[in-house]
Image (tube, rainbow, N blue to C red; front, side):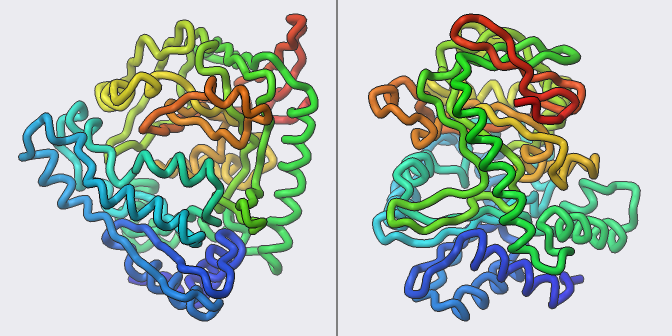
Length: 401
């Protein structure tokens, strides 16, 4: 079964021409898992119609990854061939457009793998991605690509056809492709998010406090942490939407000032495994204790990757007005789930959300970037000023600032 042709064409056009905002003459690089070939081909068609010089498709095969995790020597699992990172840096040097496809293509392929070993092989994620994003040399976007395996993971009680149809229906909804003018709808939502980011930046809070069931966490901010949302701009002035869909307002925290305990509000799908009931305790900025109902060892392995892997590189706020959260669907896909609820990320930071370049060395550096969801309508977010005053930021998922 393949997606409806009309829906697939409209999906590809939105992702290429609005999300990544491909310019005539640019190279378009597409990254996807095996099993998403039809989506890559639709993106290639949309790209060439819009003047792409060349479309470069790269596929990641999870079955090959499984063979490595089962049989490779333990001390080789963290090895990344240098040409993979060099290609990504070259895309930046050539000012390319990039599209990545999210959503688990074959959710069960890594079943039975030791979570600790799985955490050592983080491909297809590349540490060079942080540099390319921070240098703003590519206009890029990530978008969900529904597969039948993914649909069964999300809707296990439905038949395969019903699950696939429902997943497609919800993807069309969260991408606003069910509106008469999806681009206009996205521009309106982006205006709202950018305005919220501007108000947060104006307040220059010293820290944020998250409180809710199992959560009491204080996340310090840098003096010049600025809040960003929806629209990015390359160093050459090309505006693009890095995430489709996007509902978040985010910034860079102070990696040395995070204290307390936080409980995830959604499962985390990472490296082919589901981490449920995640609880993390921070002291002096470091994640010193990581527990979960299952697969905690996987995230622990990620945080051992380098000195910055156990510290925060992002804090993001999500209100209740977006289209993802109200569905109350757990998508087991970070792109979608992180835009349904406020979240934090272990690992690398975004330097463009720190206004004062002298503070850039304080931002976290790491080879990983792992988001997990900690927010919801029952989690309060409070801003703490430099004088220690507390100001409501989110209550019941509604902006107070």
